Amino acid sequence: MKTGKVLKLFTTCNDEKKTRISPESINVDNEGVLEDKFHGKDLLRSVLIASVYSYELAKKEGIDIEYGLLGENILVDINPYSLLPGQQLQIGETTLEITQNCTLCKGLSSVDSKLPKVLKTDRGIFAKVVSGRSVIKIGDVITI
Image 1 (tube, helix red, strand yellow):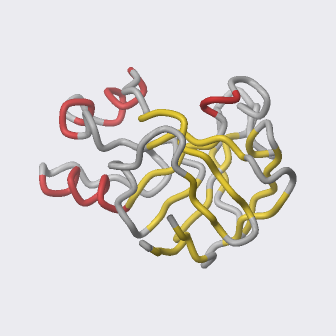
Image 2 (cartoon, rainbow, N blue to C red):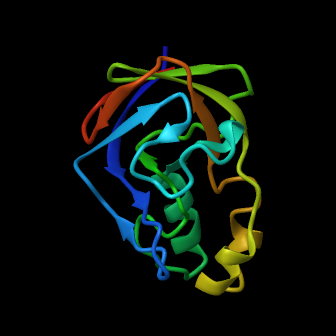
């Protein structure tokens, strides 16, 4: 059984600047992160999980970016990218089910033109909440 920890949490505001906030905890339900502008938009892409591994890959290529710039809701200290759709993660009291790998978007190019190529298969994974309404906190243990 593989375990890790939640390092940071992020939400995107529904304002013109798409402001990113890094709270100590996030509330989730079956439609995603309640405080996030993408809540209820696409259930298969409702929670984005990224690993510090992605940021380390970028740094090796000379791209030093702040946590949160990959658009993740949850930053973890393990590499979850080999997980397959249907596999589940337990994060604190929340159960998430992997739905798909995160596709690259043009937003990454605006951070650095090399970033989409560097993170082609390592940007993040999408999951849906299967445990109903719950809270995810920084420091929560992750069990795969």
